[in-house]
Image (cartoon, rainbow, N blue to C red):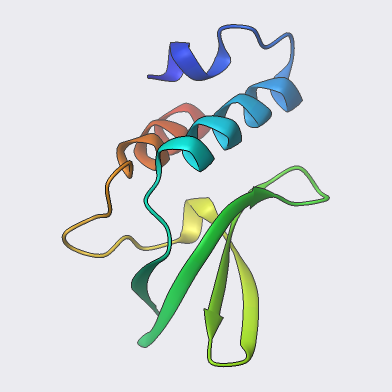
Length: 92
């Protein structure tokens, strides 16, 4: 999966774009997970202005971007979550 995401990447920025595209295409959103004991809805995965992949989360009117590497996945994980795990593996 990692190779699929970075096959055309010439640098780390392009590799992140590859992961972001594949996660956006394959991850079933929205889904609910728990962050610091609070249930939140994950609405989308995007690339932040500082180059990280982030989950756009909401709870009521409140919204916050959480780094994808820090996002706990629910059990069972949503369809396509294996792409998040591939990104985590690559990021180590």
